[in-house]
Amino acid sequence: MKELLVISGKGGTGKTTVVASFAAVAPSKVLADADVDAPNLHLLLDPDQLEERPYCGADLASVDRHACTECDRCTDLCEFEAIRNGVVDARRCEGCGTCALVCPADAITMIPQTTGRVYLSDTRFGPLVHAQLVAGAEASGKLVTQVRQRARAAAEQRHVDLILTDGSPGIGCPVIASLSGIDAALIISEPTPSGLHDLGRVLQVAAHFEVPTAVSVNKCDINFDLTRAIERLSTALGATTMTRIPFDRAVVDATVAATPVVEWSRGDAPKAIRALWEEVASWDALT
Image (cartoon, rainbow, N blue to C red):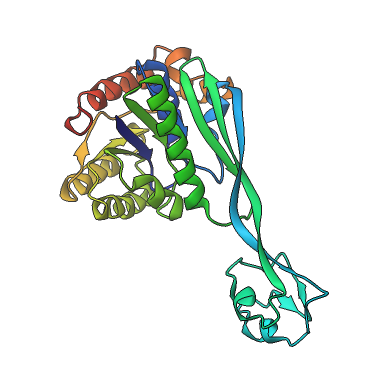
């Protein structure tokens, strides 16, 4: 079984557009959306939900008022000022457990909190595992790990040998949790100053995990100088450069229609995405 992660370094490069089109052209796979803070792959794939599981990503301190002696030791040692006079402020509590550890009366317990949901859905392109973190909740990396584990289980059950994952933008916890232990990463970049800058950062993170990487420049024709600069940087940092994707108004129209662009149009961008998939499918890291 192989895992391909599609990431971007920054938001708005067209990463999900490419993954949705890959879903339409790849023959046999399980799909996963590891952007748990703001998932949107399902918007293009029209899934039917099969299963929903709660995700408990944090604990909240709870005080037994009958056992509490109001010694205020918890108040003195809480770094987040989340507990005072035996009353917990849920907005401040980070679930670290210090208060429960130091309470001489054992009056404080840590209660697991449901901070998200993990879904298994069915699409016309195959199973999709996705999740939604409660707004502002912590431990997004742990939720990404659960998504990956559920996707792997779904692939094993269906005897599928490819997991195609839509990753998060940036280089934070969700991306780190997505990169760990995968077979290859495809980075979708764009020819803008921020695209070039953030590409360098995400390539360094991928190199830390020793993940084979390839780079494709989306909307390549809006600035050919930056497109070439991105490809030079990619080569310098050990990444493979793959098929460029030109700007195409059909991508916008397909997104508005909630349809993968390769099903919507036969234009330049869909042709390039199909060619990119053929290149990815024959990539040594995935064969």
